[in-house]
Every structure is written in C-alpha cells, then in structure tokens.
Image (cartoon, rainbow, N blue to C red; front, side):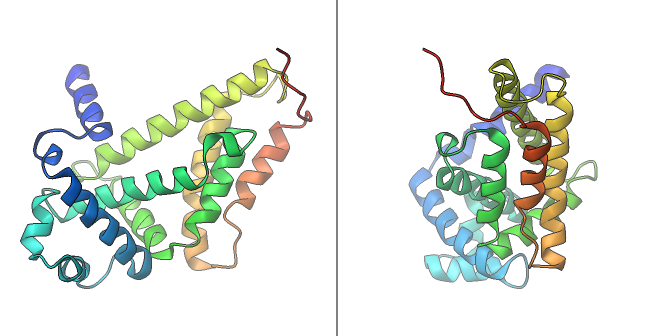
Length: 211
C-alpha cells in the first residue's frame, strides 16, 4: 500500500505515460491555460476559450491532460513553477521570506488564486482527483521549509527553541488561509502574514557565512 502511494506521488512530481508524449504541445496549451485562468479564474467556458486560442477542439485540449480536472491540476502545478522561477531560492535569505514573496506574486494572478482555493477545498474530500496533487504539494513544501529552517537554526539565524516542523506547518496553513482572505478582501497584503512569522522566529540578525 505504501509503495503504491509513493509511486502515485512520484508520478505527480514527474508525470509519465501519455503525458510524456507531445510535451511541447502540452506546454503550449499550459501557457495559454495559465493566461486564461489567471485572467478569468475557474468559471464559464474556459476550456472552450483555451481550445479556441490554440485552434483545437476541447476534446483535443483535454487529451493531453486526461480530463478537465487533470488540466486544472496541471495549471496549478504550472502556477507554482512560474512563481518559483520569479522568486528563486537564492533571492531570499530564508524559505519563509521566499514564501511571502511568492504570495505577493500570486496577487498578480487573481484567477489562479481563485482556482487554487476552490480546488484545495474540493480536494479535501476522499476520491477527489486533485487530492494526490495537494497531498504531494504539501509534503514537498513542508519538507523544504523544515530543511531550510533547520539549516538556519544550525547556523544561529533563528531561535534555538523554534520547532521547525510546527513553524513549517503554521506557515503553510497561513499561506493557504491568507489566499482565501485575499479573495474576500483584495487589499490584504498576502505576504504580510508570513512576514509576521519571520519576525517571530528570526530574531537573530544575519551574519556573514564563515568559510
């Protein structure tokens, strides 16, 4: 059972099978889909809009992703990839500040925030096609946060009494929650909630790395 679960998760991180075919075409569709969802969000005839822009049928578009839900999951994965490229790891001094900057970037693509929030809520139900994606996403983000925070604690950058696992989970919960709040009140600075966590745990000023 555990090996089957791991295989599913590895397949989400590195898609194989039919998704490995027509990679260039799939990526073209993803680029268009990202723009459509960023502008319009998850509503109306979005698949038709993507198909029209690509000069394809709706069935032709979905062929590359297996289903409508498959396309939505790929769009969210692409959203994360693009945001990560805009805020590279070495651009910030710690993983929490990077998360804050990525959240601020998400404010430029409101439709994708709506899609993320609605899909994340729906994926809480067993059997939802997006459940594995969100499970893997959370696992990977938590691992990256824990590792980054543990390294900072080892280097004396954060308080020694900080529970890196608890802070990682708090940060992820705050990031998910603030995106919902931002949909209700777009004046909210989504990164500020993570900035507050940074201020609470990183009370030691940076020091130059010692060779």
